[in-house]
Amino acid sequence: MSETNAESSGEIHRIAQIPSLLTSSARELFDAFGENIIRLQAHGSVETTNRTAIDDLRQYGVSREQQTNQRLSIEYEQLHGESGPVNPLTSDACKRILSELDAVLDTDRISVDPDLTVTSMLIRITDERLQEVTPAQSAEFDLLFVADPAEPPLREPTKRLNARQGLYSELGFNITNLNLRSVIETEAKYHQQSDGQYLSWGGPDDIRPRTPDRLAIRINDHVLPDTYGMLKPYRVTDDSVLEVAESNLDDIADRTVHTGDTASQGEE
Image (cartoon, rainbow, N blue to C red):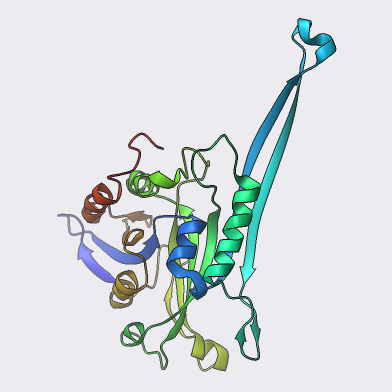
């Protein structure tokens, strides 16, 4: 975490860079992380209405409506046997889940593929580049992401990045970002050598995130997908409020211009 003079008055703001994913699409996260996902929570629903006229009362304009609500949720946790994971999210497993998603939630009302909104995700990453910038004794880490409402400066970029999936205009998703909450070395956790936690943040209400710059940068560069990954700069203002440092977001506008070239410009 670095410190910088934020205003000419000499007021000091603490800047914390939080790795973040500007999507909550289960389809996109399956594609990006696959078997690295060891825990995931997601949900989705669709409501359909069937309206039919009652023959005997048709001349009086009497009709009957029946509403059906279909819901699908995932509460996934990777299980281990003697030879390793017994239920990894392989490419085949992801295709089977998405096939069920299509069968349950696809309707004529939407023109995009049905999807689930991810509320939390834990991934396991082995990368010596992360080890190099931490006191870790091994290169395997668990990274926990949790969905938070996108801050005002990031609502439009998030919408543009997800425009082709219709997450907000057609599927009714809330506009959220998956923010990194913790990075824990698995070796330390399992052998109780220490807590092994090298990044920690309690979410938008936590005004003292512990997020070393070098670790955050390497996660953004080497773990997060280019399309959706970013470093979200937060600062603590003089009244102890954590907020996105909007002046540090200039690059996100350039990125969304390219990724949104083929997207619908009118989507919400």
